[in-house]
Length: 150
Ligand SMILES: Nc1nc2c(ncn2[C@@H]2O[C@H](COP(=O)(O)OP(=O)(O)OP(=O)(O)O)[C@@H](O)[C@H]2O)c(=O)[nH]1
Ligand SMILES: [Mg+2]
Image 1: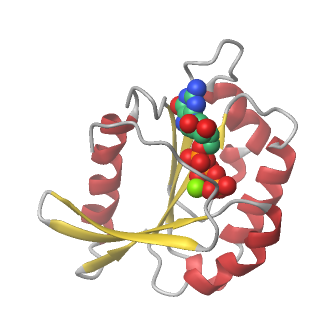
Image 2: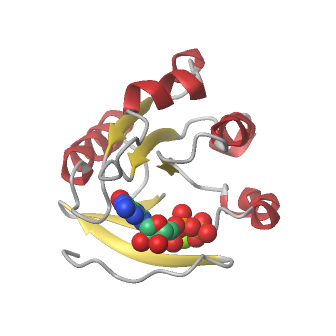
């Protein structure tokens, strides 16, 4: 939306309809706190694409992220889902690169899902536009239903 907003931790979820090149996406933003993760599965039905936003400065939690990602992708309702991983906070000195995050998350071992990783910075918007192309490519290639669930 071309503005940086002050956020607070997401409790439960927020939903937005986003229109990209005439495709209507229903986009659910889920809270990532540990106590909220058990509820993620309730959003998986009809979800066609997952966007995982990583804090690239947080090395300690990457192994937990890998476990959560693998658990998520193992769920039958997400069997056909595509995955976009954002290596966010690239503006912070010492942030891990997308390549480092890819290695730690062992993304190359993901064979049953189409995936893509992108370095980005939510504050400047850097890296986000590039990924819109990937998302649109995914949906055109997979010819799925009219309403998109992300
Ligand atoms: N420096 C920097 N800070 C960022 C960036 N993106 C987000 N932040 C900050 O990181 C903090 C957490 O951002 P949120 O968007 O609330 O994180 P979240 O992943 O939605 O957190 P949950 O809702 O708890 O899952 C906020 O203070 C943001 O301003 C970024 O690219 N660079
Ligand atoms: Mg949030």
